[in-house]
Figure (cartoon, rainbow, N blue to C red):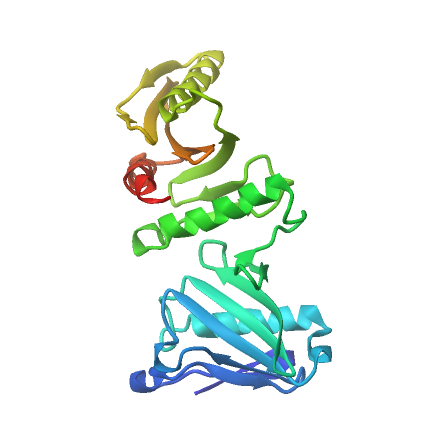
Length: 283
């Protein structure tokens, strides 16, 4: 079967035979004069996929809106069940006259939004700040960390809602099927522990609950040298709001994850447990 991508005249091969799916996806935009192909021969498909774009000259990329439309259609074709439905991160490396020109990245967690990438580090760039901006560094670190933690089937319903922008209050926010979360990063002051940060977050929830006339409860948590957690509940008017707090000491920084249940508290609890399990394994 051949898939034609609208006004771009993008042609991508979608193999009908499962055996042929081992061949890298490939095609060409006749309008733009750009060809593309999956990198890695038979091993091209995996959680991380690299697609090479090639043009004779850099002028082929001048219409960046059209290029991004092309990239979006390639990404959709990559995720086809007969191509590479396991893809979590898709890199696009553009070449002009055989020389590297730019790179882009789209991820499942990021709702397949396309971001510019630093070709030297393969890390995404912030949308609205220079790389040397400390706020940008926090946002890139948060974006990378979330992909380490949640790139698995158990969290297929989780998607990032705020990312890579210094205009947002927190470096990163996400939404699941029955929970919402955010991640904040602080400088670790001497003597500050993850337990103290988690307890401080719980105390802030206590004050907010009291202001609403609710009844506050602190549930089970964990206490470790690098990771600590606390669970809080605010009961009011027959409704219970459950929030999980996980604090993590990483080098000279403290990370605070806040996961609020929006329905059943099972997903929020599972996310907290996953963080407590995984964070100590990350340097």
